[in-house]
Amino acid sequence: MNWAHPLTWAELLGALLFFVLYVGYALRTQRLAAPLGQKGWRIGWKLGLRLLYFPLLLLALLGPAYGVTQQPVRTAGKDVWLLVDLSRSMDAPDVAPSRLQKVKAELSTLINRFQADRLGLIVFAGDAFVHCPLTYDQSALQLFLNTLQTNLVTATGTDLTPALELALSRISATPQVAGSPPRVAALVLVSDGEDFGENLEPTLRVLTRAGVRLFSMGVGTLEGARVPRPTGGYLRDDRGREIVSRLNPTSLRRLAEQTNGQYFELTNRRNEFPLLVNALNRIEGQAEQVRTVSVADNRYRYPLALALLLLALDILLTIKVIRP
Image 1: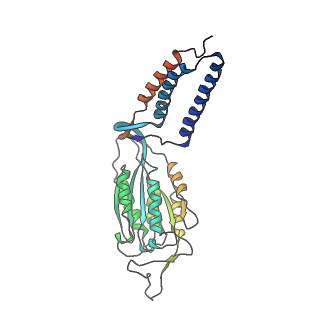
Image 2 (image 1 turned 180 degrees about the vertical axis):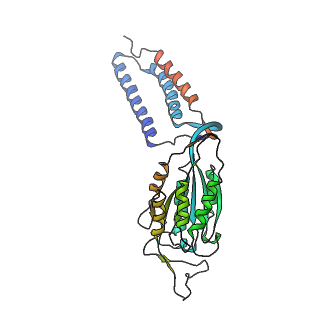
Image 3 (image 1 turned 135 degrees about the vertical axis):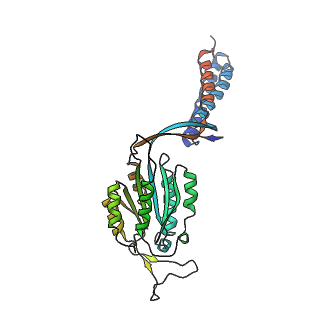
C-alpha cells in the first residue's frame, strides 16, 4: 500500500491536539459531576466512538492507495530533445564532482518535471547519435541518462553541428496527427561550449526557419580545469602541455539568442537549471491528445464514508452526562 500524502507534523499535531482537548473535556465532566454525587462514565461509549472516526478521518486525509487504475489524460504536450555533450572536457572537475556528473543529476530532476511531454536524449562529441528516442516513459529515460559517460563516444573534439542536425532530422520525421497543428519542439543543448567544428550559420538558419527554440546550458567555469584521463594523469596537447578546459559561452549564447531561446549556466557558484525548467514550462504544447496512464487508486473514500457515518451517529445520539 502507498500513501498519496505522507504523514507530516501537521497531522501529528492535530491528533495530539484532539487527544489533549478530549482528555480535558472528560476531566471537566468528571469534576462537574462529582459535587452532585454522579459519575461521568456515560461519556465513555462516546469516547470510544470518537476514537474510531477521528483516526478514520486522518487515514482518509493521508490517502491510502493500493492497486492501479487506468485513467485517460488529455494533454497538450511538446517534444523536448536533450542534447548532452560527452566530450572528454565534460570530465573536468571545475563543477564538482565533474561537469558530466553534475549535469546528470540536474537532468534527472528536470525529467521528472515534464510528465505530459515526450523527451528524447541525443549524445555527441565529434559525432552524434540518439541515445534514447522520444518517450513518455520517464523511468526508461532515467536509465539511459544514468549510463552517460564520456567513453560512450569517440575521443575527438566537440562539434555542435552534428547534434543539431540530428535533432532537426528527428523533428522533421515526427509523424503528425491529421487535422492537428505540428507538435511544438524544443532543444536543450548542454555543453561546455568548446566547439571545434565548422561554421554553425547554416544550421542556425535551418533552426530558425523550423521555429525550433533552443535553450543552451553552459557547464563549467571561465577559469577552467585540467581534464583527467581514465588511466590517470591529465590530457595533454601535441606539445605535451596539460589541457585546461574552460567554459566558452559565446557560441551557446548565440545559438539561444538567434532561435528565440535562452542561455543558462551551471558553474561552481551558480546553478540555473531551475530557470531552464521554468522556461520550458512556459512553452505551451499545441497538439492535444488523449493518453491512458496508470495511476495508483486512492481509496480515501472508504475510510471517509465510514468516519462520516460514525460522526453522524455521534451527533444524532445524545446522552445526559449529569442528571438533575
